[in-house]
Image (cartoon, rainbow, N blue to C red; front, top):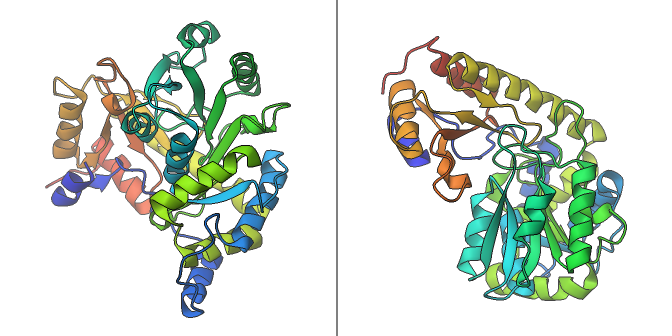
Length: 370
């Protein structure tokens, strides 16, 4: 959809590129690092300033106390962290539970490693977790549960009670919990992000994965990180090194500067800024007849695409791009079993002018000429 959108000069709300401005300290320090010669391989677990900054951030914001020398790994994006962790801790034939709608990289990473993803559907609309459905999905081959909170694509923020319930099931069945928390600062309407590893007894079995791509608008830099018990981190770091060698060195220094220099208010302002973007996006979708499922977090909206022409979600997405000049992702990318054909996903992590143009195109305030 990104390629097709570029071809017709539309507004790309498909790919989650987050093209807002990167913070000055992040960019300036990366440039300085290049000039200072930090252009070679780093240690396999990342540069010390970044690991130490991550540890301080985790203690401040996530209630996690970790050793930056033994429990923090800088990764090639959050997706690289998930891939390395799955490669290190899971075997072909293992089963891993994903909550549906799921993030495609989680699903396809598992498939690429010949691990069987098992989808547990959340209740459509409010995306509530059905614990009976989760328990029914567990078999003797189940090895892990993946929690993406806040979630791509539906924006679900798992509540404290839901995470406690998942934690209890993980302990009961001796499961790993892989978390993807990269949207942790994008939470709305007073919701609170909870890191599963902060719960009593969960630190040893939880692989907490996040990154700076979304927070600092540096998706192309590939700066992610994970924290895990030392029992697991060595193997994960080995497989990350084998696959990626390391995340880009100068960008690591830039990310460290952001974590060290930006005030706490920067992160709280993100939630305010993106809630405004969400509200504008949802209002435009509703006015266009594409009823949105209003997200509690992250920066995506799933919307009802049934009014659009086309027999499938892909056809509906093409139709919307052709007629309105706005690119979205087919809902089938996030559901199994043929579900999602009447759903499209829209990303609202856009500069204000681009988001305003997209909203105007959706509502017909301005016309699109390809």
